[in-house]
Figure 1 (cartoon, each protein chain N blue to C red):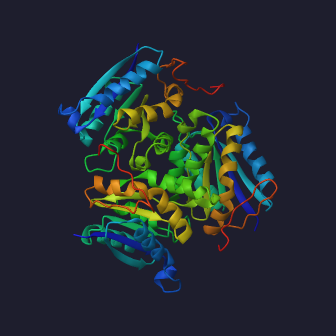
Figure 2 (cartoon, rainbow over the protein chains, first blue to last red):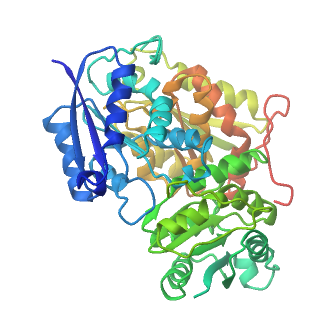
Length: 176
Length: 176
Length: 176
């Protein structure tokens, strides 16, 4: 069975067609660039609604069987930003190191990185990772945490993902 | 309407008059130094009581309409340190990046920085930030996170705060 | 009364006798190397069962009167990794700076450091710290946070621990 990766763009304006879906496309482009293992994407654009986001994350994890789901947008302090809340509603184990590293990485570029509430966690055999909304920040953030993602997916019983070593080196402990 | 900033010194000894209120004064001095926008302060000294702290934070946010509230003290592991608990009681969205950056900053000076449980979060149109109790540490911590504060207040619908650029540069993303 | 330190190795395989208990032994060796104050260890190996871990942590804190409990193992994202959950079940105050610093330290060695969910917190007069499972990582992690541990134990009313300054420098703020 081919690996499946969910890409969920969370944005009122993109879902209404006002904005082009550049964040979602940026994610897919990075995954295509970095992963050597073939995979299908499960791709959706939805508004910033906690219940919708949680439902979509559950569907991508439980029905679609995605080993990885990346979300874009909705992680700031504004009233409509509810992606972290929706993510926390569905994950079983939170992995605080992802948010810590993504914020530390963004801090090298902008002091407002501390306003991001991005988190990550697992739900069954699915790893869910919140990413920012701007393509440049998406690359910076996903690049920082991606080396740990294939091994994380091994640990939760997902498919073995191999990377294109020239573009992205995944790390697996030697005796694992 | 003039901007309002709450300064809440949380200390059994300062509230009993045993200690001088240097932490609260240090906060006001820094805000006066850094902010170009005129503002009023809502200033209180209270003991380390979770219910009192939470009530005071709610009043400063909901009744007084402060766009920013900074607390000092009560963030360590000692039995009377309950500022983070009281803050978590009242915030709606936690912003973990503030605590992470403040601890990382203090770690450059003292290894005991990891004992601080400082956090930050929003309640409606108010940003609440826990600071340490010692004036030197207050400056180090607030200096680290302050560049992100005016934009955070923009995002939650508060007044536009401008800084004295020579003393403190606030950052706002270009297309925001 | 002599100080007591709990060492809890959490591992299905070690508790079944399949693996040697190197993580637990590594902790004791480090504590013997670093601490000048004499102490007794309360030493246990148990499987990755949330209820058992929580019960053992409670016993070490409440009945045995340990001022410090270090756990090894069970902090990753795998289904059997439940040490952070069990720890959170029993602590009263979480100290997020410990996990942040331990992950940042491990990140210098392996990108998969972000998969660790290690945390620390206090329960009454006991400080509980989650450590990784591999002896090399245990040393790296405990070395990073140990300078803050004696002062933390002071603050929660435990015994005064002195270190062998040549091997490990504890830090106590001057006016504390």
